[in-house]
Amino acid sequence: MTDRPRVRPEALLVLEDGTAFTGEAFGALAERPGTIATGEVVFNTVMAGYQEVLTDPSYAGQIVAFTYPHIGSYGVSAADEESAGPQVRAAIVRDLVAQPSSWRSGGDLESYLARHGLGGIAGVDTRRLTRHLRDAGAMCGAIGVADEALVHQAARAEPGTVGRDLVGDVTTAEAYLVPGGPRRVVAYDFGIKRDILRGLAPFAAVEVVPALTPASEVLARRPDGVFLSNGPGDPAALSAEVAEIRALLGEVPIFGICLGHQLLAAALGGRTYKLPFGHHGGNHPVKRLATGAVEVTSENHGYAVESGTIEGAQVTHVNLNDGVVEGFAALSLRAFSVQYHPEASPGPHDSRYLFAQFAALMDGDKSFVTAAGR
Image (cartoon, rainbow, N blue to C red; front, side, top):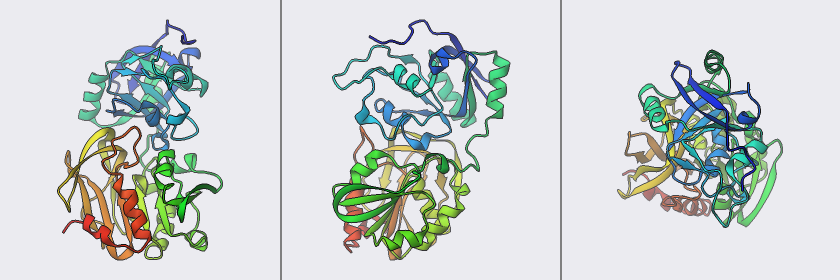
């Protein structure tokens, strides 16, 4: 049985444009009336993996609305956490399941969020909210058990993610080692997910380093390869990180995912831009240009690389929904990256071959050129 209250106080979700939604506060927001949670509001279309979403550091600074109506049905488990705890500002759901049913469950979702001082709003018409965000674009919002004018004021005061360096909020303070296979990889932590480390472990021991670690220090470790992780915020605000990546190009094989993809592009002269409402979900179709195969992918990003701006690189993958660049390879520099998440848990796993591709590249096998467009 859940130890959270069944009767929850009425709450409001108000977007910066004044659009308001009613519902019930849950978690810490239900326990502390008057508290208001703010952030950029985005929607995610996953049907499972809500704990992975909530604990993904890429969501720092954001409030996540789940389009799937029932959230919390299998509870929470320590094995499903992608970081030390929830990274979102709050959650928005249609129906919050109070009594989970799963042999893996270590408790209910509401209690889990409350322990971390977080909560959200339930009972929201998430279909209406999603349609509004698709039409008007992602925008800041606020959730609270408070007067609508106060909640709206908080939403308008939230700075959002544009131009903001949020990586500093989530990166590791000190380097640490994750044991693994025979190769050595240095991974820049821009907000790295634990499942990425699990994806690298079969073929490499991984030393995770802070986001602003100088390239000279990385090369002094004599790694077989460098990994650039996912992370939150606007890539255009990370000029110092881009400079270090640029210094690594041509010196060591490089593989980037999500924010790492955007920063690698920037190091090659590429430009990034903010998407209208981002890609957040587990069902995005991406075409691998070399083979024509379509991969179902997990995605979480609000920014993208501008096509045609990456010097000396070939586009390898394209999103079939809107044409966004989803992957590229700089063959002469032994560097490649993808915008989506091949490590996704619980899935899909269509793109896990990319980890083997990285291992082969570190071993001197450049057959990964077949992944590039011809």
